[in-house]
Image 1 (cartoon, one colour):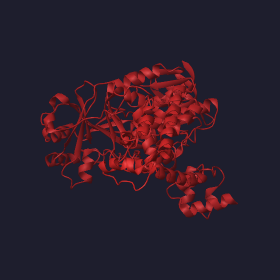
Image 2 (tube, one colour):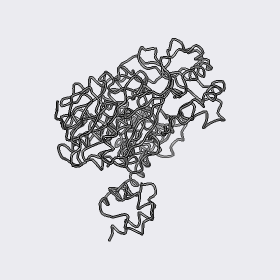
Image 3 (cartoon, helix red, strand yellow):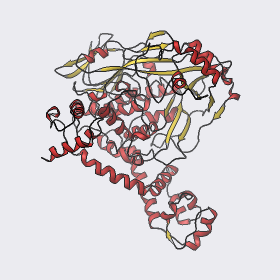
Image 4 (cartoon, one colour):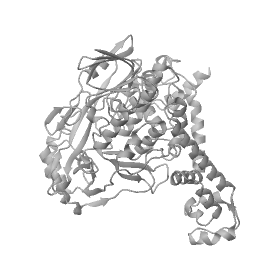
Length: 624
């Protein structure tokens, strides 16, 4: 049997869901192929979305017209804004979700998108003709002809799970691995490697002594993920809990190290540096007597709990014995042990910034197959791959995001320019323009671009325009409204800030750390009246306006730097040089530039091993 589509997406994880939704919403006839329709958008590891830098990515996906933020808001059982004690460039939203409802919310959305079909099957082979992908073949013997194919297979490509010396094939617990597909792709010259990740034990909440733990409640303010005007907290909100390992726990873990697949040679692949297993922690930090653990609910009403911080592939009896030395878990009963999983990934330097492979036209990779880790990183890649798959089918300019436009832009540029030698995780420190990439202004940065493309819809664009107008009005009012010293000084003294010697503009007062738009509105009637004009998304808009006022100098300075560096982005060099013949370049630069074949001078400057002197050589040659 044979079917015909514009776009076929392989895998219905976080990357696949966003890719399929984007392509279909833009008008491409799309098919999403998944092994299990009951696991669409499955949270394979912790049941949470967001976190440091990851939360910003989700807001960017939402601003573009994606769904991860919407699904998270609908299924959140706890919300927190991380890094509140730091500046707004570091604020990051995070939500615990109901794992089961997250899946079914995604499925409900996908099943009701026009142009999008779902097929339950396993893809065995890609079809390539004359260097261009033409479709896929499945385990059931079905052929799907397509103009573009997006691969988002996660950890399923030749997946192998480890618990102690026990090894089981699979893409995740109780789900089969995908075979033959890696080899089908590699046959066309695309190189691949192996990576490793892991997940912790799942605990029955009825067996936990919560009185031995510290409770960690969520927050109930206005923050959420989606910029759309929709309810914030639909489900019952649940707390998390924290506790610590101890020396008894560590001693048992050390005893089990000879049977750990990570240390006995059973696992050879690279694991995530920033989410290490508990056995890696005790080896890497032998002087630490305890490590913090977070116990997180898996759903609104389930007893299943996720033990964040205790990822492990040790034998299950070691895992259980070690955990029972922690007072809260002395009577612990588990649903399943933690395990590690090895899987295939493809070197992302084989991709362009659209996530299309360089060797096979119209074949796109997104998610963990590119060497990343995390639902958010996967979803961010997925929406870009889906957009560009549609464009390749129907025409238009490639859609990419620059490093000063989005964390998604930083993520993809890092992948295709630098490659990966371990699972890639996004951090705010990876972005050189953090103050420009705040969580509060993702819609300001991206929604208009997406609307012009046709992905963000009219209702979202209308909300953006209302917000922009309200923001501009508040900022302009504060810049123009004058405050008299005699009238405001008693208030300033009461708030613990220096009184004025003479009058000033309101904006100068708002810049003081003790003062905000809200507390100043209690004493300045004119400001109170202006803020009262905001009827929708009031708190969100006031917060965003205050950030623009307080951080204006920093924002302007970073914008100037970004604009200067953007000039190098305009100097196109792809295909202009035979790098191996340029003896004035270092040997390493010749090798790296030949491998990556960068689009611009700016991208070339970010390639590890390409020095400033090498860039100067290229600039001179471009001048000639």
